[in-house]
Image 1 (spheres, rainbow, N blue to C red):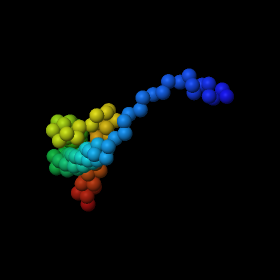
Image 2: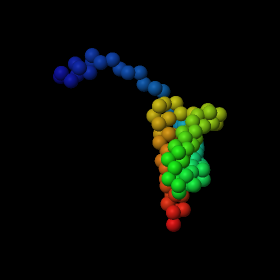
Image 3: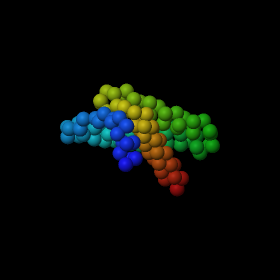
Image 4: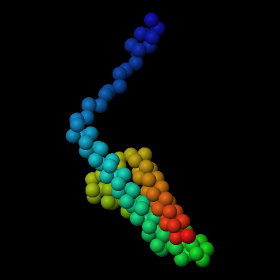
Length: 120
């Protein structure tokens, strides 16, 4: 009985209209495009970091590592206008964070794999 009284006093929140299959497909393609672009940029940034910093790592120059991180940040920021141009721009901060994290992860894995492979 008390449960019915508490539910009657609450105002119902407006519900969003259901999405059409076309809208769902558009969102899925946009998300896939963002993921693929972030992955590509992460691998490119890792390879470029390796190519520009290899000599500095051999001579233990700390400026080389900073240059690699600068390349990573540049590739993350390059995605902003490209995403907007391709009409796959993220809409929330969470999506931007996931793009940055994916780019960073693939940059780190690529650079680490290339450095370890060249050490043999």
